[in-house]
Image (cartoon, rainbow, N blue to C red):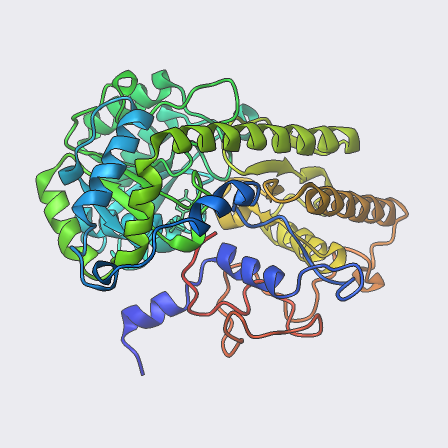
Length: 470
Ligand SMILES: Cc1ncc(COP(=O)(O)O)c(C=O)c1O
């Protein structure tokens, strides 16, 4: 018997992580696993390993100091190095004492929410939003998440007016709102938010007396013409606002998600003190910190790496969108991140979230392609899916081609008037045991436990307890 809060958390495995582990356990292989999955659901930059490998392999040998306790909110050397790096990214000076380093941006988000909110306090999020925010921001803090729906007609662009309305509504409902939280650049829709929009958002937050938590983990992964503008930068006008907090990490911009190193910036000394206390529960290993300090110290390498990473992201985006264009599959054009927000509304059997789930289940089990449905990202309307394009081109191409083939077969089946889902070829049939994404599944295997295609075919299955949120 566990506590109520532990039980609640255990039942909340982020659907993104769950689908990731399911697809990764049984990847496609032309001979060994021809019925395996094409994983286009995981936001990892798999295009830069050849750049990282020589750096990581040539690292200095371990010393005794690397095996010992270091300050649990980050070594002074790493915080100095990150402060220098972020000062460049944000175009203003960031100080090491304003930073708390923890095990991943996930940990930093959890700490930010816990430092700002008591249970029942609210955080407003423009939706769609990064699906793991549900767990990261609310799982331990007990905060209530309030959605500010963005408009499909506007490509789900950040709209301060929608945030304003959600803040007003939350007030009316009697929720004490403490912050607005968003990913900037966006995820799942990789918009680079313009300075004017961030400024307006800052004014809305100030008018309502709430803070902002900007998750800028994709700050260095901008590949389009629109330059990144940090919430902390001079253009947004919030540089020293006491309520402007920022999260960043090495997972995206450095292609190092497995290192699990993130950072919380806050200009508020009280928040920093609380975050340092909470970091005690989520520190990074001393050895990993030493390695990353060395990586950042070579600023010439960092500049070359980030420039080449962006160039590769641009190429991968261009290829993926050209293929989608050729196949007539719609998407929202974006300038940052690792994913495309793909419009599959016309393939929904009905404009509902259950129908979206059916289509997703068909794609996952029928086409063996892992993309994630909009519901996972709190999308205000059904039919949108997140498709990641930052893995090798063969996988992206074949995954998209299979997706297209599946959708065409589905459309043909429907136009032939085959309304019988038991026909078994498409999304109208939910494979046995496939629940809604995010539904907790008792008794399912832990990640890493091999399972074949005959195992329960749910992305909600194998990751119980997994807290990585790709
Ligand atoms: C917006 C955003 N924040 C945080 C994370 C998680 O970062 P980390 O792996 O450093 O915990 C992700 C990963 O997908 C993300 O997209």
